[in-house]
Amino acid sequence: QTIDRCWRASVRRVGSMAGDGDVKPKAPSKPRIDAIDGCRFALVLPIVVAHFARFSTSNERLLKILTQENVLVGGFFVISGYVAAYTSTKLGERAADEKKLARPELFFWQKVMGYYPLHFVSTLAFTPMFVWVERQFKTPWTTTAFRAFLSFSMLQAWFPKEAEIWNQPTWFLSALTFSNLTMPAILPRVAELSKVGLRKLFYALTAVSVLQKMSYSEAARFHQHNISTKRKQYPLIWNLTRFHPFWALIEMTMGIAACREVMLDMEEDKKKSRVNPIVWFAAAYGTLLLRLSDKLDFNDGLVRSTLFVPLYTKFLTSVHRDCISENPSAITKFF
Image (cartoon, rainbow, N blue to C red):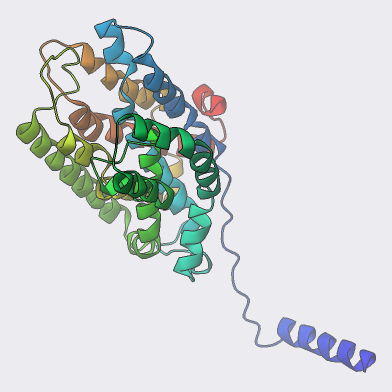
């Protein structure tokens, strides 16, 4: 029986090798783009500083420079979309990777499990402290239970009054989770687009994002620019603007479109001369200096949508192309 099984297996192998002669061409392999992951550092550091700066100085001009986490976080959503596109669509083809997206629920679960276990453990560990603070303010137990539910289920970004009550930065995970849920539907559609279509999509998404930020600016007038204002402010519209999951999805899709454009580069595209990535890096981070202007009253939402996110996306595509070139620039090697 053992000999028979071996014989049958040998016949199958020979038959597959000499059957009809059809050999599927090997898909081009994707080089690892380490620099894209390294770019997160340039976002993480100033965001971490921003969360502590308010407790370390009262200098208004210094605060204007250091507390721009709501601008920089847009870069995180763009990178998330960029990486999702690179890992889940085909290089040089207008198609998604069927194997990666064959089971949407598994794709979503794998993404969420990359960060939920740590989120769960840290939230559980600090729950006694959060509850103790709630009791100091005599918060009803029903409200406390609701906030706990939102934190553990990562639904807090949908509720502008509750999103930052317990663990403030985790609203990002909440918005990211919703975006990850939609990726199996969005990635194949965007992957089908040509370079021209991808550019049109990017411009359209930018226009939608800017329109929303302009609407907020006109309606709320809750300007981050005016740090020293003494007027009591209720930032509910601002919260909907800066971390609503839908706007996070817009920025993630912009990252997908940008990555796909690079992935469709032909050989002639790769030979074109490119701007050094450091130029786009300096331009993107240079927009943060607008806070120092006394004449231009740009709030964080407008800076993020009109300037920072488009320029930072250009930086990512420039680093991507530079990383796979024969002679990467110094900033690419650094990241």
